[in-house]
Image (cartoon, rainbow, N blue to C red; front, side, top):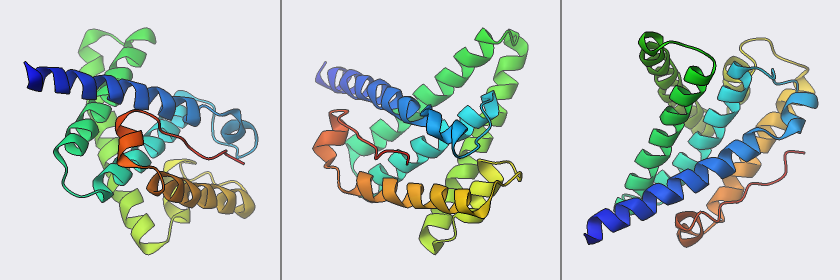
Length: 175
């Protein structure tokens, strides 16, 4: 019973973290000031970026059973959310699974790309490809966006494991 209880607690934390992530990804500045497309794809890309930043933070804490479980549950919430969103858009049962599979592939591809880019400090091409889908805005906006990502990495690094595991996650302001 104790293991089930702990898993339920971590699942609840994953849902709360995902809500915080979505709220950050929906900040109007991304769309109004940084020209991210206010579309299903644009919103998906921003949510995925923020999930990846949180997952990377959890992975940087070393092999920890709770972190591993929380990462899995946050990803499950992301994929469940994709499934629900597609159904709300009227995608039929037969098409939902295929589309979620494509989106999951996109998520894992972006995770690898962002992780490499953060290690090499070469984020601009990854942002252009994944956030702007090769339709890059002015270089100044890309510079602001990449600086934003680095600020979030630092912000997440400065948060304690206890705060994250209690869903007291915070992000810095967009601008």
